Image 1 (cartoon, rainbow, N blue to C red):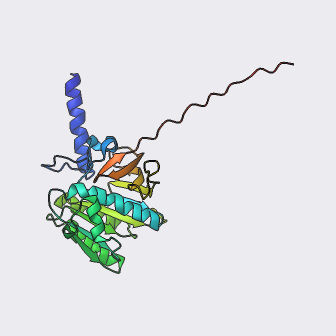
Image 2: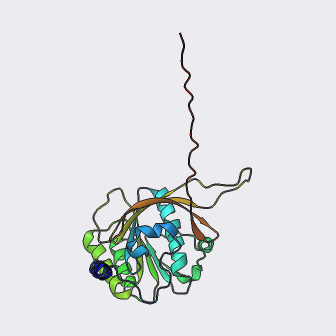
Amino acid sequence: MQPIKADILATLRGEILQRQGLRKTPGSQVTDLGLGNVCAAFPDRSFPLAAVHEFVCSGAEDKTASTGFVSGLLSSLLKNGGACMWIGASQQVFPPGLLSFGIDPSRVIFCTLPRAKEQLWVMEEALKCDSLSAVVGDIAQLDFTASRRLQLAVEQSKVTGFLIRQTKHINTTACVSRWRITAGPSALPEGMPGVGFPRWKVELLKIRGGQSGAWTLEWKNKKFREIIPKPKPAVIVEQQKMTG
């Protein structure tokens, strides 16, 4: 009876996730996007594709870090072809810089629109286009209704959406996950000059059907690498007895 109960629970859990907008993408061989141990936080240990993911930023520095991290995710999504649309009020991404993330800049369509209403409309229409692998929106203003429309769009097209939001006011949205990415100090071998590989503190604030968590990741050799903090050496304090 125990295996039967396990199968029933697994089926029910899958149905619940589908009703929440998390559907497995047929034919997907790798859905962890190279995130390694981070995948343990995802439903079924698999990065949710055909979903909208939200990255909240408190300032320009966090926004830059989020842009770099999202580029790393896009690297896996675009490695087998396909295209991505990147929407925002201004083009802050330097196309040749995408090469360091293993992305061919010619596969990214940049769309610059001054008003948030226009940006949201174009993003929704782009997410309906199943010829795209992903859509990135650099959009600060987003209410629940607009986010719900975006999520409904990807459930039909199976496109994956990323929202980068620089805002101090975090509101409720229908996005499947919410992340906060902050830049971390890079590391170089002792005595070596220059700048190290990009490193981020990655916080998964919430995810539907999964669990939150925090990790330190580095982008090296065109893939993510988790940085495990070294344990601090134990400090042995010797107490000497005082004699009178």
